[in-house]
Amino acid sequence: MSVSRVTGARRELPSATDARPESGRSRAARRRRWCTPWLYLLVPLALLGAFTYVPVVNMFFYSFTDWDGLSPDRDFVGAGNYVDLFTRSQYFGVFTVSLFYLVGSAVQIAVALYFATILSFSTRFQNLFKGILFFPYMVNGVAIGFVFLYFFQPGGTLDTVLGLVGMEPRLWLGDPDLVNTSLAGVSVWRFMGLNLVLFIGAIQSIPPELYEAAALDGASRWQQFRHIIAPGIKPIISLSVILAVSGALSVFEIPYIMTGGSNNSETFVIQTIELAFDFNKVGLASASAVVLLLIVLLITWVQRLLIPDERVELS
Image (cartoon, rainbow, N blue to C red; front, side):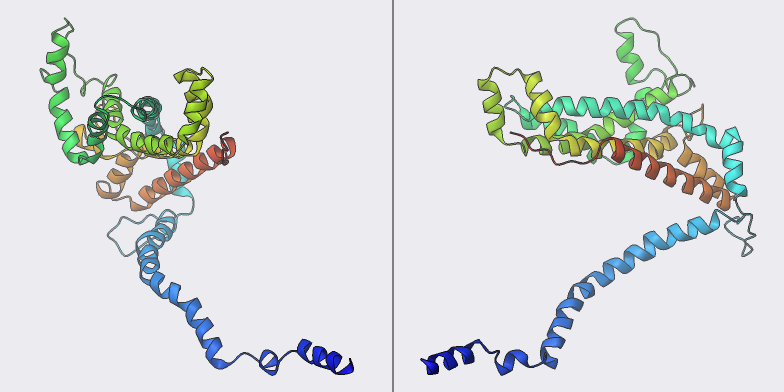
């Protein structure tokens, strides 16, 4: 009896190998496991820092100077560039042009959501319509700008089509009251395909059993959209809103190619580029870029507060 107790006690004692401190070989292996992922990330992180974060830091620095982009002298002017932006209407007033693109973005999201809902279910020529709607997003923006220059020119395609129904031709890109609406329409046509693909992917991730159960309960398509699709793709809709707002505030290539910012179509980005390269006011242009960045971040933060990304459990 006593022998068994002694034996059991010996079995419960820690072995000599367990009490021995960690060997140098195991420490080296653990260190190697920790370092290996960072070695793979070293080059991407270096490129990200060199081409993203370092230029951003330089941009913040330039925004407090009067640098012209060429001279080695950079006099510190403090917040003078920011004061000029917010006190001179010709600088900050161009944000009003972004309102046209914000309205166009809302139309774009609504139309993309409508077509995505229809094309997510069994529809004739389903893949054909998906390709047609997504194709404009694949085309280069410069090419789209030149195509729509001919579309909107006097006596061009649009005037010809409208003339068939008795409407008079108009200066779509020459009239300050029409130019921004025309350019915003081009942006809607081009970028709707991106939202369409995002919405279709989100809708198809919803379990099909939910649609079958809703159909058995007599739910209409609108009721299925309202109670199943809209809550199920809420994070994607939130992402699309953020992309739409940031895109509307930073519109550049379409108005720059089609009008060059003339006829009251100059956007904030076009003005920033002109300040930097046409008027050699790199400090003021950097301040403009900083303001645009802060506005986008602020809108994103407010949108996150109002519509938090909560995981939706559909049942």
